[in-house]
Length: 80
Image 1 (cartoon, helix red, strand yellow):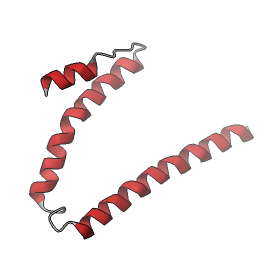
Image 2 (cartoon, one colour):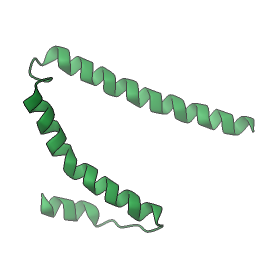
Image 3 (tube, one colour):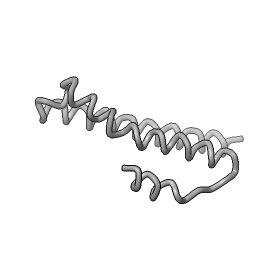
Image 4 (spheres, one colour):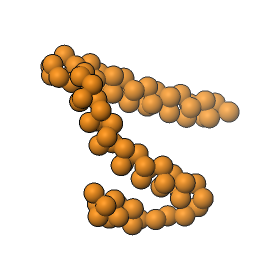
């Protein structure tokens, strides 16, 4: 039981570290680059990350169903 609590605490600390790193990067870029928080730039970021998000969602479903498909990267590059 104690080992499970340690694993959960380690996972939570890892997730919090990643979240803090993302927030720090966002704040640093907001201070350094004056155009970072403009609506046009944020829309571009969302637009460019949409393709990766769609592929990641599909791969999540494949992995959860017990399969493994390694052709997604090449198909995404071909579609791009």
